[in-house]
Image 1: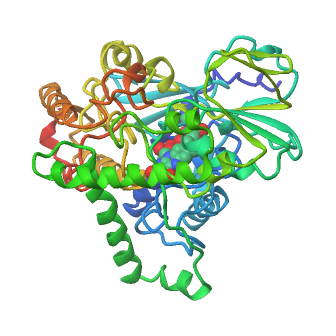
Image 2: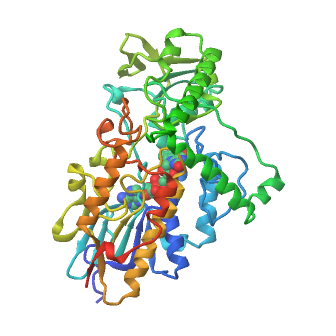
Image 3: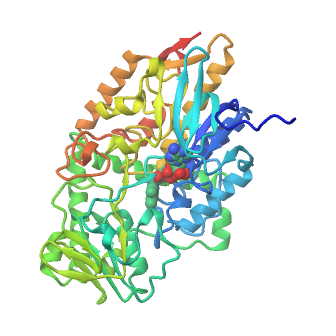
Length: 507
Ligand SMILES: Cc1cc2nc3c(=O)[nH]c(=O)nc-3n(C[C@H](O)[C@H](O)[C@H](O)COP(=O)(O)OP(=O)(O)OC[C@H]3O[C@@H](n4cnc5c(N)ncnc54)[C@H](O)[C@@H]3O)c2cc1C
C-alpha cells in the first residue's frame, strides 16, 4: 500500500547554501555576484507572482526613475536605454534582461512570502518559513526584501465607504479605466508629482490633495538616437558617462551636510533653485495662496527633491484643482475637506509613499530570530542598529542589502546596492574559504562604534535637522533611520574591503 503523502510541515526542509529574499535589483545583483564567484547553490524567493521588485510592482502612470539610467543601472550590466530618465516599462525591460542574461529564473520561486527566518545555533543554519508553509534551510541569508516595498496607506475615516475604485499607486489597478473620470490623488511627493502630469490630460477632472511644499527642480531629459544608444553601451564610453554622472550627483552631497566653508558656496546655489521654483510657480499658478503653500519653508533637500518639468505646468491646467486644506474624511461619493468642501470623485489614488525605516512594525516583512532566540524586529522597534547597514551582531551569516542608514538622499540607490552586495559576497567567500569557520557574527563593540560615528555624522546633515516630516525618519520626525550620512564615494570605500577581524568567528 502506498504511504500517505506527507504534509509540507512533515517534509524535511529544502537546503540551499544561500537564500536570497526578494528579486528587485538588490536580490538580482546579489545572485549575479554569487554566480560570478561560482557559488551557484542559491535560491531567490519572491512574494509577488513575478520577479523584479520595484519596477515590476510600481506601474502607475508616469512612473519613472529620477536619476539618469547612466548611473541608475548596474555598472557591469549595460543596456541600450532610450532616454536619460527611463520610464518604468524600460526599467522593467532592463530587469528582465538581467534575469534572462544570467539565467536567474531557474534559481527563483515566486509567490513565496517569507514569514520568518530563525537561526539554529547548534547546526549553524538558518530555517526559513514561508506563509504557504514551505520550509528551507540555508547557511547564509541575504535579505534583499527592499526598503520601499511596503506601501503606506494613511488612515482616513470613511475610506471603506467609497463607492468607486480606491488603491495605492504602488498597486495600481490597471483594470480601472480613468479616461474621462474624476480622479482624486492624495499625496504630492515623488509619485504624486509623476502621476498628476501623466493623467491630467486624460481625465475629466483631477483633484490633487496636496501635503507640504516640495523642492521642485527642473531637469534635462532627452531621447537618445539609435547610434547614441549603441555607443552608450560600449566600455570606455559607458564608464566615462557613468563617472561623470556619479561625480555630478555625489558633489551635490555638500548641499545636504554642513561643511564649514562649503556652505558659503552652496547657499547661493540653493537660493538660485528657490528663485527658479518661484518663477515656475508665478508662470503656472494663478492662486496666491497656492503659490505661497508650494514655496518650501524648510531647508533644501530635507525631503527627496522632485525633478520635473511637467508637474507645475500640470497643476496650472483648467481641469486640475489643488486642495491644500487637508482631508476630513472619505465619503461614498468622494472626499470632504477640512474646510468643508465635498469633492465628487469616481476614483481615489493614494500617492502616499512607503514605509522605509519609519515604522519598524512594518519595515521588516518577516520575523528574524537570531542567537538565543533574539528577535530583530522587536530589537529594532527599540533601537535600529547594524554594522555598516549590512550585518547585525547576534544574527550570524544574515546579511541585509539596503539596511538601515544605507539609503540615498541625493544619488542612485544602485551604487549603494553594488557596494553592499560586493561586501556581502566577499564575506560569504571568506567564510567558505576557511573550513574551520561555520559562521560570522558582527562584533558588538565595532557595531556600537559604527552606530555612534554614523549618528554623529548624521547630526551634521540637513535630514537630521529638518523641520519637516519625512519617510526616512523614525516615526517621520525623529532619528534619520533610512538615509546614509555619507557621500556615495565614502560609502563605497568604507565597505570595499571585507575584514574577517570585524566579526566573531563561530567555529
Ligand atoms: C516608486 C519608486 C520609485 C523609485 N525611484 C527611485 C529612483 O528614481 N532612484 C533611486 O535611486 N531609487 C528609487 N527608488 C528606490 C528603489 O526602491 C531602489 O532604487 C531599488 O529599486 C530597490 O531595490 P531592492 O531590490 O532593494 O528592493 P525592491 O525593488 O523593493 O525589491 C524587494 C523585493 O522583495 C520582495 N519581498 C519583500 N518582502 C518579502 C518577503 N517577506 N518574502 C519574499 N519576498 C519579499 C518584494 O516583493 C520585492 O520584489 C524608488 C522606489 C520606488 C518604490
